[in-house]
Image (cartoon, rainbow, N blue to C red; front, top):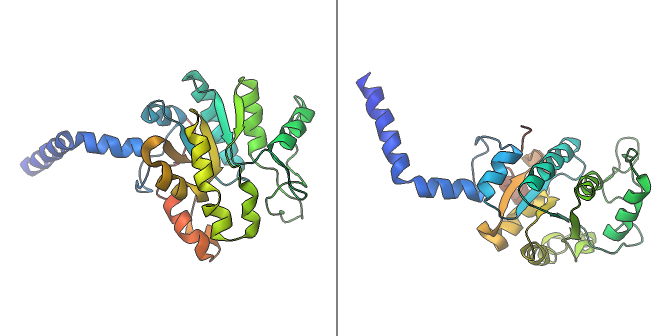
Length: 239
């Protein structure tokens, strides 16, 4: 029994001695073991301490859609008023940009948003239909809350190069600059969490809304390290 008491007392002393470092680690939301407790929107916002929050997701993950929407509603109560989306303002012949997507979203009115979008950049499902990006549902919530929606990826279409330069090097510095401009909830693919953290460090808080595992890389070395990093970032959960 006395060994247990001594061990418990030692843990308390260690925590008190290193309390500041432990709390700072939690506030950063990076390099935390995947076994760390998941975070509710309110817990995340409390630890963010008013900073911008970068949320990594899989753009076609319906569960992530609900989690981000819950975060937006909770963030509204904390004074957040800007949603940043991983998009450029302009479209290209094959795919839609933010200006076009907002027009389409307004066209849905208060009705349901179609799950399929022939202008989406997501891969087709098993039936050959392209999934609609999660940001349509997130933008609807933001608009209903009276938020401003901003594109945070001015070089977005560089991804069509299908290379690390096109996916990351040409885009992430510009994304980081957009995020620095104002306090926001910024939603991007979780493959960008590592690059944005390297640039922004603890200027923002980081979390993910989708699971991340090495299988998601599909054996592509371009994604393996990125997804491994994302897997260390705590994940949102419903309250």
